[in-house]
Length: 95
Picture 1 (cartoon, helix red, strand yellow):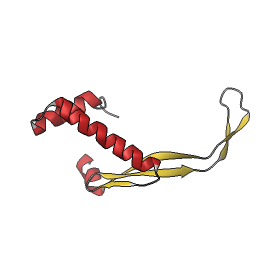
Picture 2 (cartoon, rainbow, N blue to C red):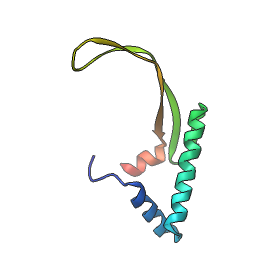
Picture 3 (tube, helix red, strand yellow):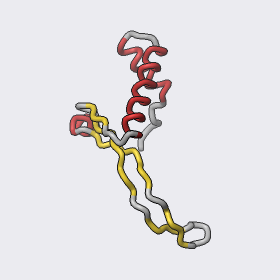
């Protein structure tokens, strides 16, 4: 990855500057957005944002793994993990 990732403070400052609103307002919107996406994913729903991408839950099956320190086999429980699939418009803007 080239450069440093944009952190929340830098993202809110950039959005506030381009929208001509306060950083506090943008931060409240960003917090509400992440809560809404997290809540939908917790219920098992997907969230699609046109032109940006889709947030979804992917199921990981139970499997056998290895403890890297001892080499002993361990059982890894099944789990759900959040995933993001970018929209083609977002992919094109990056390339």
